[in-house]
Amino acid sequence: MSEKLTREKANEILHKHVKGENYIVHSYAVEAIMKGLAKRLAPDEVEYWGICGLLHDLDEETCPWRTDLSTHGPTSAKILKDEGYDDPVMANAIMAHNPVCGKNPETTLEYALIAADPMSGFVKAVAQIYPDKKLASVKHKSVAKRFNESRFAAGANRQYLMEIEKTGISWDEFIDISLESLLEIADVLGL
Image (tube, rainbow, N blue to C red):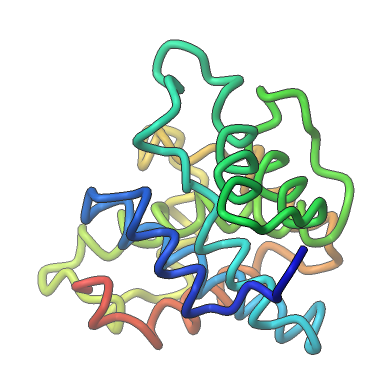
């Protein structure tokens, strides 16, 4: 690797390969949660963890994941390599957020990312049921309650969400970290 991947460069790569506003906003949300988790789990790697979150869906618009889910993750790793960033730790974390590609989470970073991905959408779904649709209105107990309603935000993989516990962070703490992290960028998220 010739140079360190900065947040600025990572954001540039994201915008080069991802055009859909919803995907970009989702990437920012996962970045925020990953930074929040890193503050607790890897305080010296907050920016790095954030970048992993920012780039986790880098291949969303370029790989055929709708017909072959196993391509989602490895394609992102290849894009990063082609961009000059051959970082096996980041590549593994990105691939591990989609175990269908053949890479299961094994490290704290990988468990954090597989949980942060669906959590971003889950919290957003909870915010959407409030009259003002604002993150500031979302309470911890609402997120906890909705988790047990399997029809609510059915696309948010509950098994992946619970992988957070393999990092040593409890589900309750994960809710708090996620709400706090997303609230910091509520304006960017439009929530």
